[in-house]
Length: 532
Image (cartoon, rainbow, N blue to C red; front, side):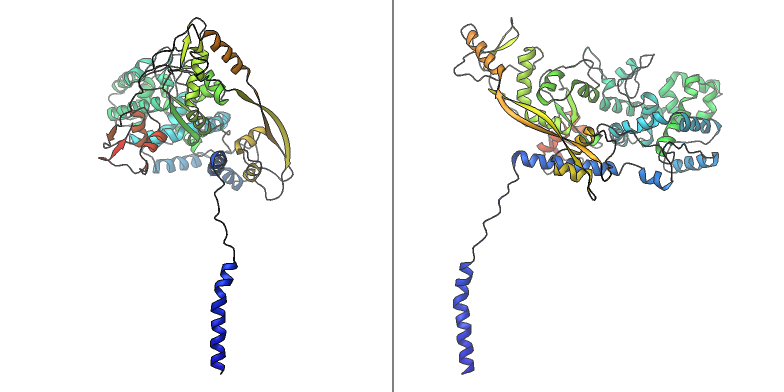
């Protein structure tokens, strides 16, 4: 009887379990609400946080704190201390960082009297040293050669010597031309960081192959091989720098000691209580866009709010504010967010350039739905009823306001930036911060923007112009749409991803998009890459 009752109970549970589950409401599928502009903002914010964390790993506060230095302290070391540090450098370098009276006196002079210079150069190095190391590694050269540019130009690409040497690596015109650096009315590739660095690597490699001694190669880089050869003859055929040094020109006698001192101080700057001046931008925050047409930097400024001065500082190769149309195409280097905006607004960029400056400098045919009134240097719509006027009907007017945030315990600059949906770098700029350090109780100024849409006066004017000229200007014959053929390149020994991109006039990002699934750091000889 008990068994029969148990069976009935189990049967009851089974019959009702279906009803119980049916009564439960299934949860609707979770939708991904992060899309479009919101997704892009989150990605940008994540990148900024990543770059900030990366930059934290590059500062040397911990070393200075461990050494218990006070602000402004200038540490003093013995000759023995300097020689030990130079010996450490020699263990990992193919250079001969000799510890002698000349190098010691130069190091001491730099450590005492060139401290501000060292701090500024350390800040600028964040923009150039990654590029230098990439190129030096590509040619199999010692990475310490990156410090040569420090004593040549102070890492200033536009600096020009009294003798006429120009750029980060101070090429004379004839030497630059010999190594493929071009110059015309608009560009001087001696000021192009990438091309000049590549040329410097090739030149230094040749000099080392000639002399077999890096210090002599550096002397030849400064004074020229002819002067070094004369000094070798006067020395009786000696083949080391220190033996030949007394017979070199006076400036070159100090050149290698300066290189040793710069290498030492920039390597051990934290031990000397030196912190870098915070740079505006790091090398890994840059991207490039290769242009299809000639563009004025003023047009770029109008369309993405990127000041001409900032464009020129990151693109020193251009002698004026005009970027000419050439083959291979001229490329523009800038912050990731600015280049990203230009990529998405590229058509609008060319249309605005044409409207402001006319058709001069265009490499490709003009758009087929517009013509140019050469007399008035402006765009004219051929058919005001059917043609599209390339001016927005409305425009957005932005008002800037400021609010203040009091820093609480546990908060960081990154968490505050995320809370207000702003970039960390902007937050630092608004508050004149040189590092990401903040203190509880600080008041941080936060910029907010209120945008309103108003009627665009330029649209009204464009409609008026198009009506006035509709009967006097004929529509140009439409040009056939060009068919872009795919092009492939077979990787050769010694090729790198960046070198292949530069060779075919595309950016690294564009080459990556043409070859999804290909790792830029794992390419091999014989592999095929799409380059067009």
